[in-house]
Figure: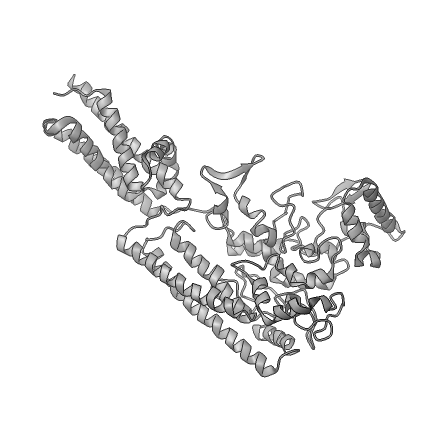
Length: 577
């Protein structure tokens, strides 16, 4: 009988683990060896992504190791005990297999439609602010003190100059008019004898601009932060961009699940400042259009009217809208630049009357900017801060729907309650300032057909993924497989470009940045789906975050099984002695 030395057991065990893991996961032995050490802890936390194929190979690896190390005679002599071992191993594998098939990730951060609706309507929006300053002239004195102090100390001096050159200064609107707070306000603090707030919200602006504040509250702009919180949970974009190998980034003792979006998505959508102050770096500074303010109101007027000049000229320029409406997923600025409207703007905008209160086409400007179409007045169409009031389609969602006051993903009524036909008639009246009725009617017919064509193309591609989910060939976890990124880009990138280009005179965005890319996406989706069906398995290790979960898990399982084999051999040796 051959005696087993520690070397003859340990070294082959390590080699088997390295080789098997390297082959199965297609990574270097050096990397797998490193992952074995963290595999034990990963096993208990990540059982749901256990590779069934690796689990089925474990008994085979153990049997091959014993047969090689002990020889045929030993194998035949101990076949009863070995049979028991294999039976137990197979039972364990079957249990793990069943567990993996039934278990799904459960997200704890998704906001359901019901509680999202309650969240939207239970907040205080635009409650009439109480002005505690009397009529004795204290406001003017307070403002003088603010300017004098900041000028002498040279702190925020440019802001003081901006205010002095603003319409607010001309109208006698002072610093304290906007920044004054009550001690009961959640974001108030004492500053040189005054109770003030850094965050000037639409509720504050509504004291003088009540109509504009109410119109803004009805618009999709005001729901920017609410949409962000509702649509993205920690298993989906954009949070995966923030994940590091060991979990989320931790800064100043806080776990930050959305570090990449603080200066990304949330810079435009807005942060949720409810219950937080400006000292919390995760919510401030931020001027996102849909920011949820400490006083409960939604929005930031300075997103378009930069503080402290609050210029109407600035807000009317397309570059202001282009702060957010730019890039592969909402390229309105690029489409506008490509269009005839953008061409005229680039040629002669320096001659236009940007500061006129009632901005009129043909008099103050020759071709519309974003504000000209969506906000400025036209014959029988008043000006508005509800940028949704002239939109007949929702073009930003996966499948476009008419804006019949029910199109919001949150189930929240937005805009003024009118039908999409009324909204379309308003936009057409804006267009007929420069174009004939037949020109306008035909143009919108063409654009509607583009949207319907896109809806058909996307729905057809989405059905391919739906069948893969039903057949268990895709996991329920979002964005852990390449095909999920492709279908996302199909609507969020190519689909938006095609639809928005159709309504904004951008032919290149309809065709080459739009439907050409949509066709290419569809072909790739079909090939990915066929690969999944032909292999009969879900190859998760595709360069996304799940790779870092599978690697240590698989290596850890192999290490555990080999440790069991090693222990069993030692027990058998003791029995023989």
